[in-house]
Length: 262
Ligand code: BT5
Image (cartoon, rainbow, N blue to C red; front, side):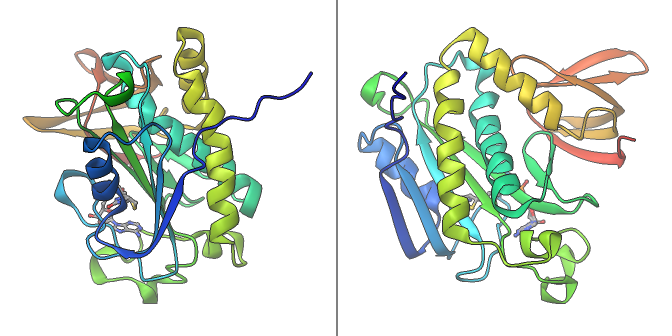
């Protein structure tokens, strides 16, 4: 049987320097850009994390990439849009470096000892113009490829918390090969979000990779936090946490691993 090439993620715009690849694609989306546009940067002047935090990466060292998604995704399953980018990154990292990262819910990729290897930021413009039928979701991922090489590279607040593929694999990893492997893995994963069966499959992959399940966690929410044992990820990609007073499902929030699984 002939294989049909997936047309997604072939419009790759690579910048030497830009403020933020997420900001760029959100603006492009407002101008009507279609599903599948990719922005990559050698250096970001204002790389952003969640909740106004900063994403650090020296010029030319790490993979900084965002994708514009327009998916027929029910609003309650929106978390899966960022999950498939994390899952595609795991696929690519395994293929290109031999390292197998775990996923910390909602979206961090962790090295073997729990240090952060990558972070994902999803930003939706649900009120913006719905060009091409679906609202835009921009998902950006920063993967530490060549930086940090050791704790000596890190600013004080990140010492002991961040790692890189080069540290984990013990050899340099090619950023461009990693990007192409990520986009190749993302095509079919993003397409599968269009059906309930496909979404269940992606949620199942997330469950398999998620090292938060089985961990004692503290969940930080806008109005306060709570502690419990993370027990599952739902088919919408939400985290289930067992507490002394019953099970709670977390749709969005920051999670701290108090005692890791196993
Ligand atoms: C994230 O936020 O982890 C999302 C990071 C997304 C970055 C990508 S790069 C391409 C695209 N364009 C953008 O502008 N952003 C996206 P969060 O969970 O809030 O984590 C941020 C926190 O991680 C910071 O406050 C630091 O403590 C820490 N951090 C910053 N840079 C790091 C790095 N390179 N490695 C590990 N930890 C880092």
